[in-house]
Length: 436
Ligand SMILES: O=C(O)[C@H]1O[C@H](OP(=O)(O)OP(=O)(O)OC[C@H]2O[C@@H](n3ccc(=O)[nH]c3=O)[C@H](O)[C@@H]2O)[C@H](O)[C@@H](O)[C@@H]1O
Image 1 (cartoon, rainbow, N blue to C red):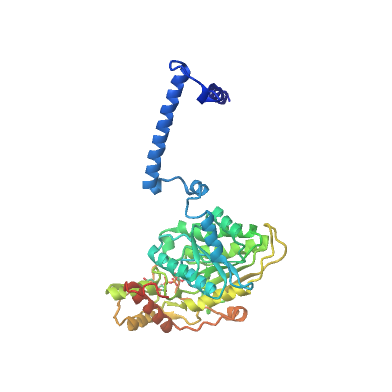
Image 2 (image 1 turned 135 degrees about the horizontal axis):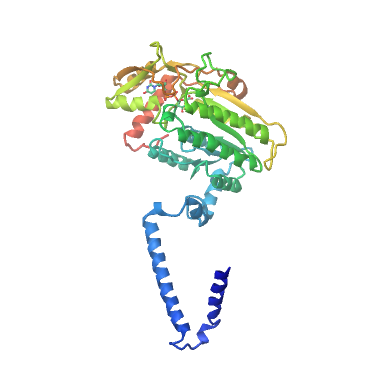
């Protein structure tokens, strides 16, 4: 307080109309004026140096929240809001207005384009993290841009960004696909699974529950929640309390968290348990993708077998079938019942298997790839390491068939043919690099 008084009294020393005042150059006032000029000069000089430093060293800039306040971050500003609104504008009154998280991801890209093509409003959000080659995500972003979908670069853990998106657009639906995927990587980086699949999910649901109107939510769970369940085919009624990986455990936790937000806040939530989704623009961390890469390079591939020399198999599901399931889940989602963070009545809570219901041994997947690529794979068969993998998956899809009209139509060989065609084209560096 005393310091404040001193500062005020110093300011009071200055004449209110300095131009009319003829100073005596020997008075203390003139000395102070000279001092002030020097301070002003050095302040400008230091400010200039700092500005130069931050412009040439962007990573040394202040934290994003303060930059955001200045409107100079990757999001914010009038032009940005215009882009957000334009992307989320639907073509007809009956259309949906969907926020797609993980929009530059494999499933996110396909779902976003399909929604946009049929006239829904779509806005994407994606963190473009480096879990796998970010240039593939950027190529997908270009594809989305051409389809009229704007992807906001940001994290689902950023509550102020999500809040801002809901301030700009009244989303009717959220298609939540942003996640840390991959079963085996969970042993290397467990924190990223907790951060995306648990903290990120909770953050998103917090914003959704407070939104007015509350959106309906459809999100990606995983076949991995069945874990050590050995009853086949896997039905939604089967036990899911024995996850074999941390990845599976975070997806299972997501399903329980969904229950809580549905119960307390009246959010309408649908979880989709995807079964090993594959296809063009897929994820390079998945076996069918890196097997293709390694076979073409003449590198050996490792094929896991069960401890009893038993076959390891997956219910591989083609991306177009998954997209149909996602759209059907959005179309049949009932409205959330809450408003202003308060539940008004019971809301819809659903879980569906989206699989192909035709498990194929991994050895057969490799044989199909060999045939399509016309290259013999260098197979190395090893016992399945204890890294979170399960022996087989097999979806019972009768519930999804009944409620969503879901009926997969693409068998593994047909789907891999489409994938291989895309792969060769994309990685040939040819002109058709970003073809669909
Ligand atoms: O359906 C799911 O729930 C999951 O499907 C995939 O997980 P996964 O089925 O393990 O798919 P891949 O990693 O592509 O593995 C496919 C099969 O290849 C086998 N594999 C994998 C890697 C390898 O080097 N060798 C090998 O034989 C695996 O054991 C597995 O049986 C996805 O990576 C998960 O994100 C997703 O949630």
